[in-house]
Image 1 (cartoon, rainbow, N blue to C red):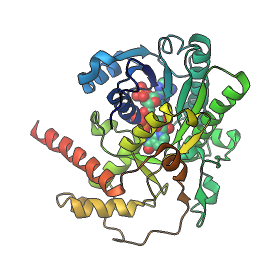
Image 2: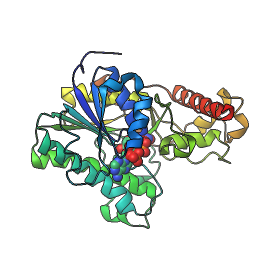
Image 3: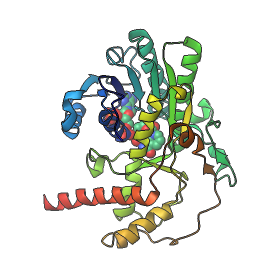
Length: 347
Ligand code: NAP
C-alpha cells in the first residue's frame, strides 16, 4: 500500500540502528515521509546510509550518545512533524537491571518527550514503541482462559524489577511498562502540544528489509529464531511469550497509528496470533530440508497449549490491520538467514 500522506513531512525515529526501527523507517519512507533518525555514533549512521541507500536523500541523522542525556534530543526533534520513539534496551542479560534496563527505558522516554515539549511545539503526535511486556503479568504464568487486552498493565514493582535477584526477562518487561506509563503520565501532567499513542507488540520476527548486520550481532528476537537453525538448540525450549507479530506488519501498524487522529491517547496490542516454539521448529524442519537435522524435533505438531490469548480486536477494528501468519514470517526469515550463511561460505 502506498500513499502520499507523508509527502514533505518529516518523522524522527529514535534508535535507527535497531531491528524494529529499520523496518519502521522503511514503512514511513515508502509512504513519502522524510526520516530523521537518532544514532549513537557515525558507524551506525554509515550502516543506515548503506542499507537505505535508495532513499538517502530523504534520511538525515542526529547523534545522541545515550537516551538519558538531559536535553540530549533537543536538536534531534527540531524540524520534524512527529516522533516515533523505538529506542530502548532489549537485552535480557545485563549487569544491572536498574542501570541497564529500567533507567534507560523510562528516563530515556521522558527525556525524548521533554525535548519535544521544549524544542518543537509543532509536534502533534509521539508514537511510543512499547511491548506486550508492558501488559503481561508474569506472576500469572500461562493463565489459561485469559485474554490480554490494552486494559492490562504489567504489575511488577520498580523495587522488584530493580533487584539483582530478579531475572533480566522480568526486569525488561517491567522496563517497558514503566516507560510506557511514564509517557502517558507526561502528557497528563504537562499537557504538551502532542499526544501519545503506544504500540505493544509481543515477540517480533521476520526478515529485515535492510538485512541483518551479522549473526554475532543479531537483536534479541532475531537471535531467538536463528538458534533454531544454527544447531545450538538440543531441544525445543519452553515458549516464553505466546504471541508474535511480523516486523513488516509492526512497521505498518506504526504508520497507521501515526496517521490516525483517533489513535490519540490509545494503546494497541499489535499481535498476529498465538504461537509456540514447537510450531517454529515444525515450520523450519518441514520447509528447509538442509536444516532439518539441526532443528530439535520436539513433539511434532503438538496441539496448541491451553494458555492466555492476546486480543488484537482493537488494532484490527480501529486501524484495519491484517497480519501475516507465523509460517510466512518464519519461512521468510529463515530464507534470509540462509542467504547470509551461503554468502558467508562463498566469501
Ligand atoms: P534492537 O535491535 O536491540 O534496537 C534497540 C535500539 O535502541 C537500538 O537502536 C539501540 O542503539 C537503542 N538503544 C538501546 N539502549 C539505548 C540507550 N541507552 N541510548 C540510546 N539508544 C539505545 O531492538 P529491537 O528489537 O529493534 O527493539 C526496538 C524496540 O521495540 C524496543 O523499544 C523494544 O522494547 C521494542 N520491542 C521489540 C520486540 C522484539 O521482539 N524485537 C518486541 C516488543 C517490543 P544501539 O544499536 O546503538 O545499541
